[in-house]
Length: 83
Image (cartoon, rainbow, N blue to C red):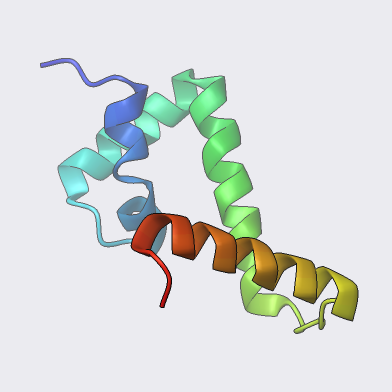
């Protein structure tokens, strides 16, 4: 079976964590060397993880926090009903 990009995308977290099966890791390395889209995706994911690890918590401005909380409340109620 020939793997395609979506097959590798499912394995990205394990690949980045270093917990991927060694054979699949070699396949992923080969694929990343050949596929610019997947390479961009994994580079972006690496940067995101690094930013989350290195970043400081920055509070949201109160008006954005209220807006976000209201949106989440509306979506929760649509999905699960009023609580």
